[in-house]
Length: 384
Ligand SMILES: *Cc1c(COP(=O)(O)O)cnc(C)c1O
Image 1 (tube, rainbow, N blue to C red):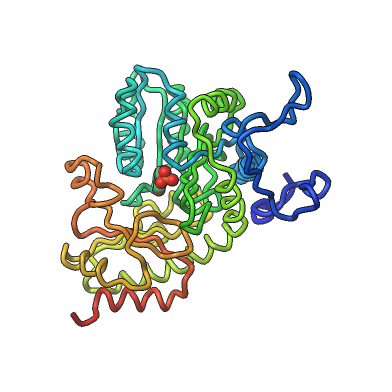
Image 2: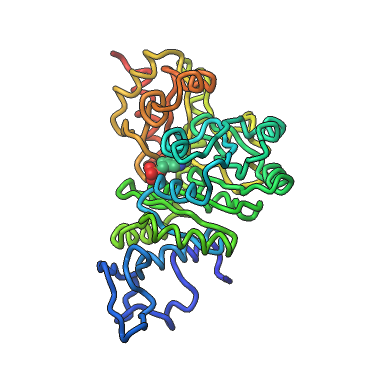
């Protein structure tokens, strides 16, 4: 793996020698459900698309390379990857998770996860002592998001790894918010890395995808078996869109981050904004730890306004920025976590975390930053 990250987003080693049919520069979409057998007991390497497909395999190889993993499976969406990951556990197993996880993960853990006999404890994993205190004799994994969603708490990955080693736990990191361009959890000892590929990896708000990568051969074999068994797979066309999206991941991330930093600083000067949660601001509580374990801060900003009225006013008045769920794409999107992404998180948890009526989440895209600030300015400060 000699090529650097940016090059690996676009090229495979030996891609000309092992080229595509007809010298196609881009990966063909193998829109086929099944593959013929050249003879009895023989295979072209592909049998049936639920198990594997050449377009998807190429995508999986790219993500494996970017995450510095041993293997990756591409799933229909992020939740499908998380459900697949949970299939690694047995009834009776306990998992300690970050307390402000993606709301869909919490919903899944509390419904189908618990129905399967798994139990979960939610703690502030930014606090290693609290995390250690939550570990029980049947705990099998730590499940982390850093930064967390949407309050942007930073968890120290090296500390989580030492807890995982001490108690013989799997370390699972949902790396959606920073992408492998800025954060490579496997370098810190993560066993499993999850992505909603719908977000930065896809990058264009035009398709859903998910990934489950592992640094371990033994887990890779189990995951491959579970993957074909439960049917998590990403379709060939969507795999193609992801390959296409990832080619520009580094330049998108850089521009999104640059825009986000400028916007976060501007927001801090606004009278109607009470608090700006952006991990690229030096006064953010996790700034130093994040800096130690990543090469950037990404482009997710959470905003506490001065009132519910201001939050609603902003959502109703933004014109360039779109009021929509999701994040990570080239289009700037703003959401209302209380009603949308975190609507299923129990009220007590939401209030404790501060996911209240005055709280907005902003995914900064690659538009011209002056246009974005002008839109925010008219939404916040314009005349009624
Ligand atoms: C969106 C998201 C998911 C779920 O991914 P989908 O592709 O929407 O299924 C999981 N984790 C995080 C951090 C997310 O932002």
